[in-house]
Image 1 (cartoon, rainbow, N blue to C red):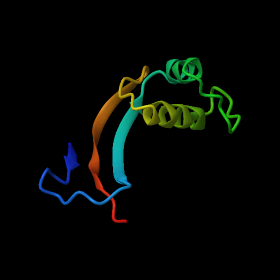
Image 2 (tube, rainbow, N blue to C red):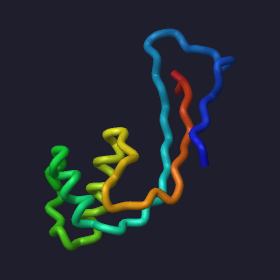
Image 3 (cartoon, helix red, strand yellow):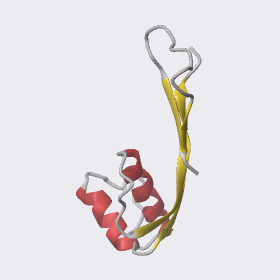
Amino acid sequence: MTIEHTGLTAPVPAAPTVIELSRRARLAVTDAAALIEAAADAGWQNPDGFPADDPHAAVDAALWLWTLHSSALPGVNVLSDGGEAGFAAQ
């Protein structure tokens, strides 16, 4: 799935501009330790306190890294990446 944009012909709302993004990806974790380490190195602080061997830690780390607009996640294969973007209704 590719990222869809509402297009250049979409009406541009009056200020302030509100952009709505929806992103969906499927990731196969191949090295959870590398993923968690990369997130920690980038500033992720594991706010839920998951142990490193808990699969939930990898989910949190991947989501946190992905939120930094990074599709280059160590220890994962991106199976699909896509979403939608456009102006939100005011």
